[in-house]
Structures are given as C-alpha cells and as structure tokens.
Length: 79
Image (cartoon, rainbow, N blue to C red; front, top):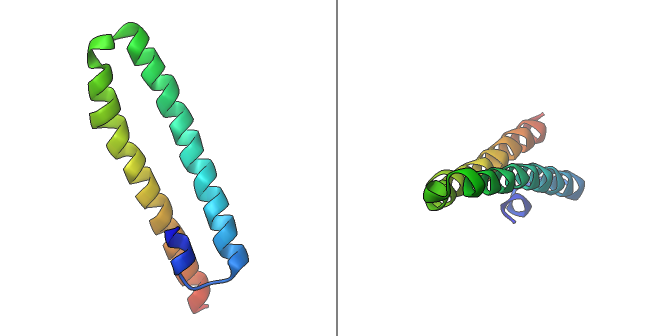
C-alpha cells in the first residue's frame, strides 16, 4: 500500500508490489518450514522462534523491500 503513495508510473508501482509480494511470500515459506522444523525438534522454543525471531524478521524484510523500492523509484524519477 505504501508503494502507491510514491510518485511514479502505475506499471512501476504494480511491478514493485508484485516483486515485494513474491519476496515476502518466499520469506514466509522459509519461516513456515523453519517453524515446523522447530516444532518437531525443539518444541520448547517454538514460541520464542515465532514471536521473537520470525515476527521482527518479517517486518524487517517488508521495510527493506519498501526502502529498496523507494530508492529505485527515486533514482528513476530523478533521471
């Protein structure tokens, strides 16, 4: 949603949102596989892995994707 607020072409925005969704979905798949593995072998740390490791990591990935997009759009916008 934040990508829509930046200046630029609609095609650039849609491509940015699609790439961001693919990246976040891929990281989420890794997260789910990891949490299943943790639940199977170390169930005592599942809550910690879910809340203290993966939740902030997913937020960080989302912010990094947005900042990368913002940098690319601002570079393309100034050329």
